[in-house]
Length: 212
Image (cartoon, rainbow, N blue to C red; front, side, top):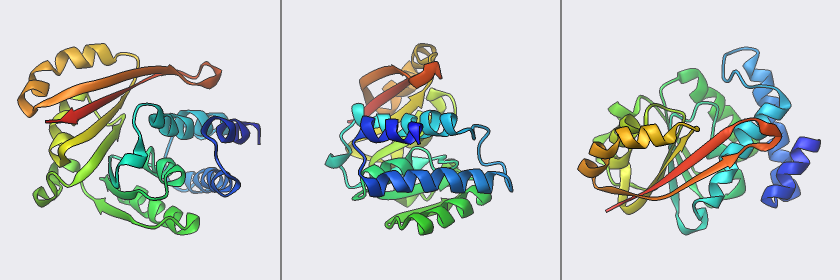
């Protein structure tokens, strides 16, 4: 329980939230034996490279100020499910192209008793154009190059809303390559926060953009 206790201390989790993360890990480990949900399945990797990596977004953005969140390419639920556990008021929309991952997330949501989560099995490029400008905040984690995810995702964000791109240590190169699209789609970079994961498990940079 050491890894979970460190999450509890870092993010001020209550016992109910902590138990949800424990179940999340056990269910992910169980279902990952049947289908390839994630290559990172050790307890330390899941706690720090998935859970911690998702929850640390609270240091770049105040999720208490928004009502809904769209997670593009959620995979096994990161970052939206950890954020939903920490911020239960959030209404979550998940866009995921893998049906097996959608089915896993539906089961997980039921087990964790997480409400107000909608699932869309499709690629973000094919997502309903009527949903443009629908979301307070959109997030994408390890989905594609920054210039591509900006093109795919920013139109989903409300005016004066936010887009969060979760990137690695080479974010500066991607930012440089994205200057043209940033100007075209009229967004501004509000913040870039780089952090080291515990146990020297890697470097992350979270980029916060706001639409005009």
